[in-house]
Image 1 (cartoon, rainbow over the protein chains, first blue to last red):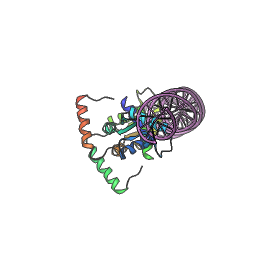
Image 2 (image 1 turned 90 degrees about the vertical axis):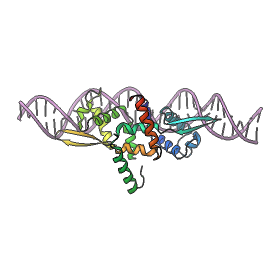
Image 3 (image 1 turned 60 degrees about the horizontal axis):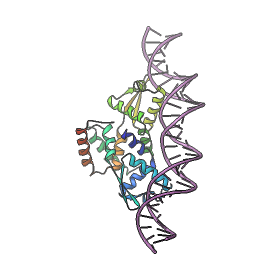
Image 4 (image 1 turned 135 degrees about the vertical axis):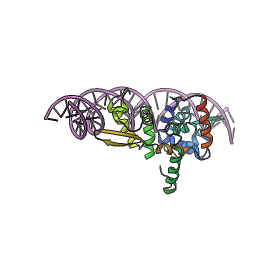
Length: 106
Length: 106
DNA sequence: TTGACAAGCAACTATATGGTTGCCTATTAT
DNA sequence: ATAATAGGCAACCATATAGTTGCTTGTCAA
């Protein structure tokens, strides 16, 4: 049930982009996160609310600003759900190789 | 773009359950996967089609049956996107601890 | 060879979801 | 004080999506 919120939250590309931005720089405000994103501030606020409900981000108020922080724990949960302890080394090796060859897609 | 399909596919609880079933026993047919799932066979077929499009499962035809196999590679991709190399040990330790204390939810 | 079983295809419906506009509240700075 | 800035709330719209029913195709066994 908590996990359902996590997956729903990750299903949207705009929300994933917001997470990426937070990963690049933690503790940004709503306006900062939304700047340049071809979407109204209200839309961004909704996305951040979902991410917060899913526990993928934590927030803290500072004056009139609201700061947002990435929480990686739920992602870890996804990983462990379908990837067995003994597959992990093999998959990591594969992934490292792929990254070395290509050079980042998505 | 390929990753978008993966996240969309994982967003639905029925599809996650199908993945869980495949993780429990690999190589099941459509009917086997759907049995007991309070949903028509056609609905299951649609879900499996999405999972296959997302490359989360691979399929093989055997006579009139279609066998389904779990592919964990895209899950690995999610993990590595938001969890830095140096956070991994810490998060795994946390997760192991949590599992030891609680005993599996969701 | 004909019936039963496994799966595929297509149209339709209801609801969930992403995004918008418009307005209100709270904090900071002049 | 008051204007500007940062954010919150609510109603509304369009589309995406999960699920259904109904029918067709392909394969196996008696």
